[in-house]
Image (tube, rainbow, N blue to C red; front, side):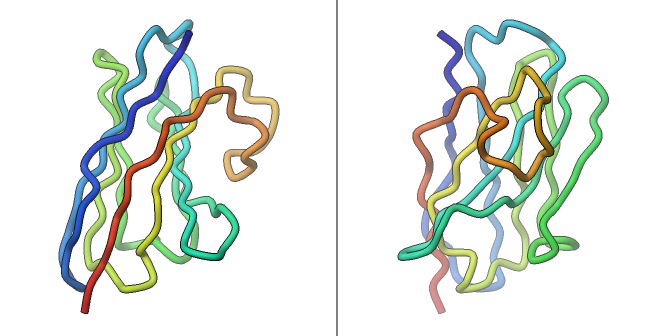
Length: 125
């Protein structure tokens, strides 16, 4: 069973930085997409960023462009989300998803086949 596992969350002051990691165990292909999503309290899950592991192609939500950077280490089947200039509104549980089929666009949750359990990011004032 493919299993993404997020790590790196925590408590940080506004303006600070965190780097999240998503390690994928038992990946069935080297060509897949990794998406980062987040769910803030009392809100629906929202797209944050995505990267195609083979090509390195990236995509970002407007709310994080210029502040967050997604990257990957394909040899380790691990993706990263570098979050800088964090704001209070970035507080959420962050999830990574893995999409082997590329059935939908990167921002659609339904296209992702496997999900991690999430990691909490809390930004304080």
